Length: 457
Ligand SMILES: *Cc1c(COP(=O)(O)O)cnc(C)c1O
Image (tube, rainbow, N blue to C red; front, side):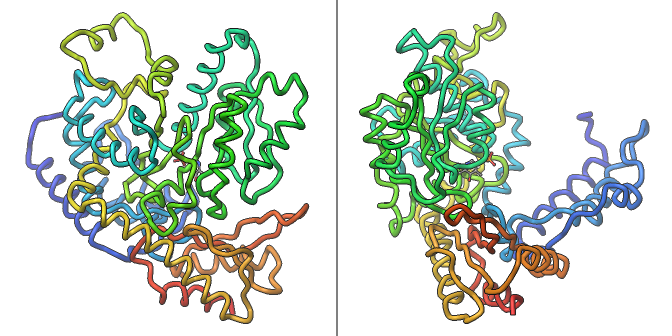
């Protein structure tokens, strides 16, 4: 497989040419999905005993298959949480692969893990967590949340000793990301939801705890606050929640998978006050810190607790713990063993550009949300559902029914103009279908926003 022949040289040139042209395209074609049968009809059999050759396989990918994907970095892709990896990070993602580094243990991955840890130090510094706090890069926010919840539950069980068989209970709000509920299933814990999508406050949390039965209170071990809800960019009252958690001796997790990037932005940093009291924090660099997929991060106030929960034992793993291998072992702090050094692209990009550029790029996302808010307010047909928060804007087209939003989304997507999807916002007891922007890409322009809003006429 490693014999270098002319085919490989050609394939390498093709791949590099494509990679370079793709990352220099600021407005790539906005692809959309095709049915599986149609893709099969277009590309035919690709995995055969003899192989179809690199040239053909690559051509099929470039000319057909990649066009059936939506580029997440398109400046008018404002749906879900888009992304906008820096060119430096994308190129270094190729270098990360080419370097074949095993990122579980220092013994094998020292130089790569060193780089990851440099990037991690910056992330930790943004949180304001006390000395000793540290974290690791994960495959994403879901894995980071799971790693934190496992750590929290293990810490809870080990402190009291009496909860060995108790099913844990976690409090969060309905604004929390779906992965909290999903990962609670993985650790077989119950979730008690505070029934408001608006900012969860310390007071609201105290009331919720007060309403639990003694049996429930006995099983309660953690609170998950959100540092920028995925739907609306709302930051919970982290200061107030921290106080309640401290008093009630509960693990305080802040899920800032989407919003965490905004810790770098001076204009909104005060909204995160209290995050420095968290026991654990999730931040996704692949969302608002311009890293390619996939790259999440989990940070712990006391990493030792994570190690107690996650370090794996095995006869063939002992060697990693000997004298020669001393150093930071990422495998000890999250759920994965073999791992890509997925913090490496972020490190290179940070090292190349400096942190100030990150600050400015995040501020631009916040500014774009403000610009969109203003344009919406100026338009008599449109209305803000709530003030823009971080880089999220929820707004309605007066008179539109849910189907109108869906049809509008499909129409713009089909035309290759934009991907903007509807969402729901809970208003009292009812869910209203509304439109939503989420800005990440600093290259999105005011013109882009106008162009999209104009299609709502
Ligand atoms: C996106 C998101 C997640 C899930 O992260 P993945 O990287 O998709 O696994 C979790 N929490 C919040 C708040 C998010 O926005």
